[in-house]
Length: 119
Image (cartoon, rainbow, N blue to C red; front, side):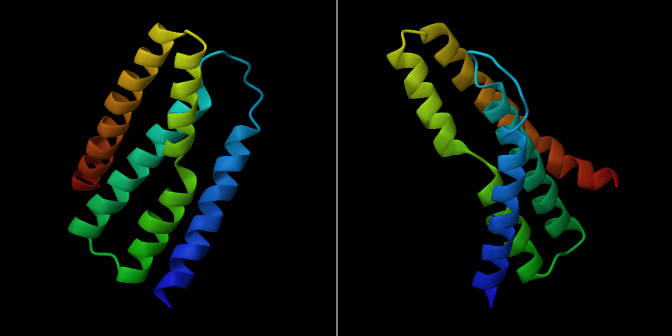
């Protein structure tokens, strides 16, 4: 039964990720992926904080964290886009993308977890 919760959450997360990819933003910098990863990191922090402070059932946690966030975030796309930037000689953009991704996504988890403490 747990696998069903993960599968359903993953499907919904993937659909939301796809919807974000439809935003008509033309840029050489992968901003939509960066923002998707930040949003996913924020959500997983929020969900984890909620699970720790307020209590979530195992299945709800699996649905939200493993399923939805796993299907929503795009770290594999981040990796491919970083390699593509490097292959295209855009070393500064690649470095900036790596740093911003790490700082924003780690911050998203911290902020998300901390937000639960004030709710």
